[in-house]
View 1 (cartoon, rainbow, N blue to C red):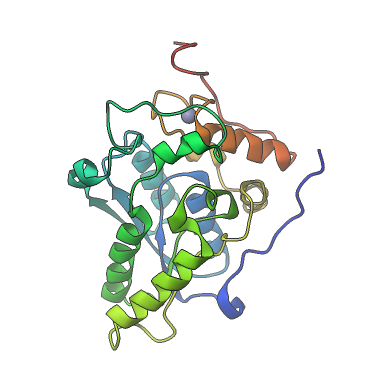
View 2: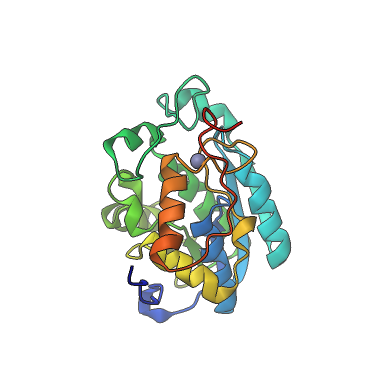
Length: 245
Ligand SMILES: [Zn+2]
């Protein structure tokens, strides 16, 4: 396996935001994004959204990251939206979380309709409230296959919408960005290692059990990322809840 080369996260014009609202799920990507922006000298305000996800233990991990980074942290309780979330396996308690590779057709079950627009709407409002000149979220290239709201087309359309919707109210130079948009998950794992992100302080598993299951789409993706990056994965995996108790 050839280790993936180091990558430089993209940021428009390489301009570092003065103050950025980061949509922080508590997972590896958004946590690494927060660490990277902090390392570039940006002030952080963190936003975590409870949308009724069954793996809401990720929110505890987000809280810990906020404490470590000494950043303001808002947790928005939108758990009431789960009946509106189209029966996504992430929010419907009766639905099965599929095993397998993240890019597989079966992962369509994990799409929460319109999730990123919903979270970014909150983040843009928060940015205006606190005077932040950027909003950043952790979408990356590996998300594009299944999640339409992680694609470059979505980002471009959302940037335009946010500018029109808040015309005259946005801080100078305001941007909505996804600095990892063209990066692979393996590249993000490599960046996390270089930044010293405490990987065990992040949560990925969609099943939300006591430990990462190791077999759901996002666990498979996480394991693969460390493997491709040539890094030791410090995550403790339990195996499928049906196989290992
Ligand atoms: Zn899992």
